[in-house]
Amino acid sequence: MNAEAVVEARVGSSDDPRIPLLLTTAFAAPEQARQAWQQLAPVLDIATMAHDTHGVFGQLAAVVRTIDPESAVLPRLEGVHRRLWTMNSARVRRVLDARDVLARAGVRAEPSGGLAVALRQPDLGQRPLVDAELAVAAQDAKVAERLLAAQGWRPTARRRDGWLLDLHALTLRTGPHELTLRWCDTEWPYDGADPDVEPRLVLDGAQVRLPAPADLLAYTLIEGYRLWGYTPTRRLADTLLLLRDPCGVSWNRLVQLSAQRAGSLAVHRGLTAAATASAVVPTAVLDDLERAAHGARSGLALAADRRAGSAAVLLRRTEGMSVSRTIGASPAVLRQLWDVPGEVSLWSAGARRLQAKLRSRASQSPSP
Image: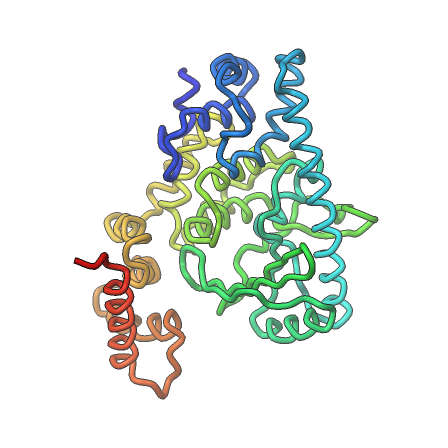
């Protein structure tokens, strides 16, 4: 099989043909990785690779060390890995200190997203930490913000993102370090127990319990479609990391969670893109995910996602409902999505949003 078939020729907005070869070399079976490296080695120039590929260089260094130990680029790859390890170690230490402050006050904050993926790896140079994420309960978010502010963390941005657009995010910063608190309007859905019996030991003896690989994989492939700053290349690399997790992915849990989150089609597409680089994705799982995606509405939601956010949310959250139930549920969905309080007319709120959008488009249009 041609190594470049591992992922689609276009990864997000990138046309760089080296990216599929890079991911294949880093994550594929040995012989397939060797074939990909033979094509990649003559054209690999770290200085011209997209920044979001640098997080794969740790895995790439380990593979090249085995299949081409005399490679002239290997010392540079290992240098990038060491730099990632140093930067990540400092950030993780600071974020876990913040987590301890919250824990002492009775606020549960657990590693999630990219931070949890990084902590599941053999060392902290295996994945970049663009966004060190802690998940908290919705009712604890304001308390957590006050506690962290007292420790010198300052808010820099508030967002609502995620594929279902119901994830609230508050990014805080102290010195060079950032962390993101994330919560949703319902119970946090991606917290399946880590299959390890004992907590993970990380820096300075800190102990953490991490989400199971299936939960992290669902989070990556569902919410990752809209998470701020999360590129398609990084999402695919995280998928490949989780597929080879020593604890293994609970496929039943993944299929069930994907259906509950109306994300079966998104997960199916993500795993299909990764499948040729990882033989551990069973065909039966892909078939189950495809069946769980309820036809046209799920596909329309995915297609509409980047062009019409509110319409996509309605399509996803009402998947499987009858037309009458969909109409009845829509006002509540829009109020939550637009942060419209009960005493404000939804129609007037919608009109104001539309006017603001039209003004924004007009201001961005080039003058005649």
